[in-house]
Length: 127
Image 1 (cartoon, rainbow, N blue to C red):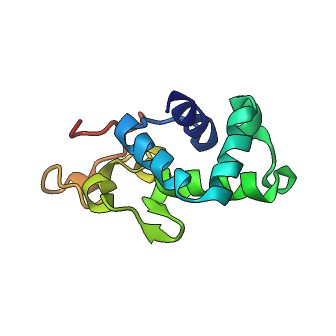
Image 2 (tube, rainbow, N blue to C red):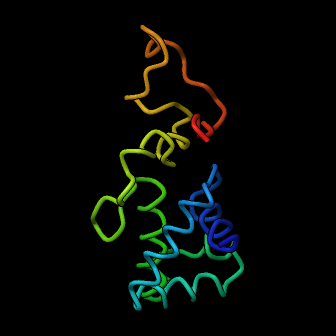
């Protein structure tokens, strides 16, 4: 699982990754033989190479696995369908961390939307 988190961090360009969600991602991959093969290919490469390799130079299986990893962490979907707990983890998705802002649906205080964005990645607020 640590290898998957390291690979995810390399592909996503950093961020906070929940080990429980990484375990869910591993389970989703294990249910799809083609994606599992692509994941195995990505895990066999050094992580810096996985992140730097242009998409067009990857095998179709590795390309599909990398896209599945990115969609899982950034959008909370796997194989074009929302993951089971997407609504519970929506505010902690990588998309919000990449924008350095909490999810728009997370109410901080009245008028908080007018405050300038933070310049540090958001960490999960409900560990």
